[in-house]
Image (cartoon, rainbow, N blue to C red; front, side, top):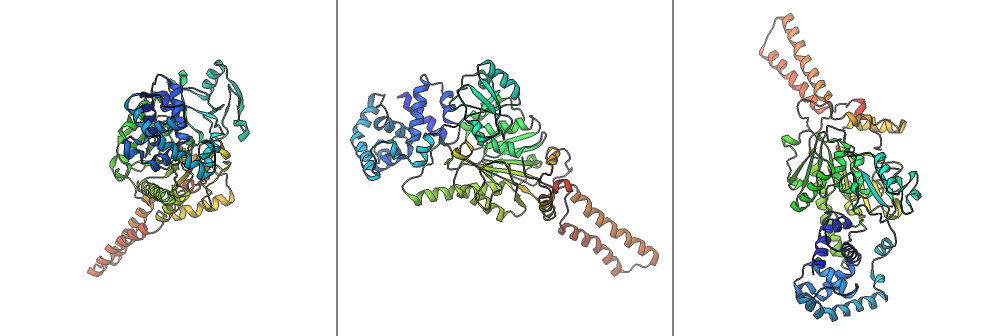
Amino acid sequence: MALYVKAADILEKAERKQGALKTLVYDSKFSNIKQLFALVCETQKFSSVLLELIESTKLLKQTRLRPHLALVLVYDLLIGQGLKCGGSWKVMMMKHRSRLQAALARMKVKQKVSRNEDLLPAGVQKAAGESLPRYVRVNTLKTTVEDVGVYLKRDGFTFQGNASRLEDLTLKENHFVRDMHLPELLVLAPKTDFHDHFLYKGGHIILQDKASCLPAYLLNPPPGCHVIDACAAPGNKTSHLAAIMKNKGKLFAFDMDAKRLATMSTLLLRAGVTCHQLAHQDFLKVDSDGAQYKDVEYILLDPSCSGSGMVCLRDSTSADKEKDQARLASLASFQLRCLNHALRFPRLKRLVYSTCSVHSQENEDVIGACLQQNPGFRLVPLLAQWPERGLEPFTQCLRASIATTRTQGFFVAMLEKHSEVANTKQEAVQISGPEATTTHSQHACEEKPEDPQSEDEQTPAADVMPCGQTDSTPGKKRKRKRKKKKKTTTTAAAAAAVPAAAVAVAEAAPVAAPAVLATVPPAE
């Protein structure tokens, strides 16, 4: 029975995005890893079929089994190699076997198929026939890409150079290449196993899908900055951010689940991350005006989603279309609240929003609603060479999929704060020269005003100009008063009103940001 309990626990963790299935299986320290992995993967693949069987027979109500435990038991009873347990649970499942078998037969008749595999959704059938490459992110806090390459060669791997096209990611066993988009990512043949390798156990490499590496890579926070990872667990993106920041600055990481945070703490310790501050807290309840967050300029937001893009995670669509739409609507509402809250941090410059979903309700629709509600932000064009774009009109965003990018399904968008004047200059620069430099982001945190700025003020220049206008007017008035040597109550009142009016005008007028900040090219 330990096999089924452990498998159910792993499925639940995977559904809550606490890690990839294979990582969770190997971290479980179960005595028969291969048996456990096979059961978990097959149960996950047939999850939509199993859920329908369980619902139609009302199995949970009659047995009071936990949902994920019922999944693995029903899988082995009907589709797998038979139950591998005894005792009262086997007696209970055998009692319901005939009803479950009858429900399975009715499903086949209804869909006019004869094999269990033919009951799978078309997308799952296609995904099952395709294998993604093994992506390995080099942890630059502990080593270099070159050193990892040397170790791999010593272990019998052959380096095939830098990839330049998608076809280069189709590799033979024991061959590897360097990715063409992410320079710290190595690509190997599917199912290459590193879980027992010393590079993985020592935190020198991170087993992370390429699409999952995009958010931190595109946000690219410079060393010394203050950054928030809003929904951080299980921590791969957090460790990636820390590596980009070179462990310098502050990295605030939030998550509501204490168990996920405990797992994340172990991962970050293994990866050598030291600049982080973990918080067991709902990000929506974090005070954006809190003193400790006054210097936050970059935020990575990867909120809970349907998981519909993940090969290892089911998109729990059912025959009830209204139920599915209600679920997506609820997720999208939550995601929009998270996004709007993140944009309230007063010194925020850039935010990356990402999901592992393929549904536009969670992706482009959320971004569109957010831009309407937050006109002070705009989309930043991302990776012009990336083959799959966001749906119209949000082509500045990125999408990823098994077929087009050889990755899990994913969506990434970057929002940037701007003023009206900076926006006008940005559009002019992009038309005349799209290859403008991005070096400004490397120094964005080096020069900070002493006091936190308001949400509409972006540079110290915004504090300088109004002061100059305000101070000059009363000085001139005093000179005129000395020449005329007349002081009436009316004149004094008028003189006092002038600086106040100048301040009001200065606050209302848009302030042109420096040219360096105005010329924002597509992020690379």
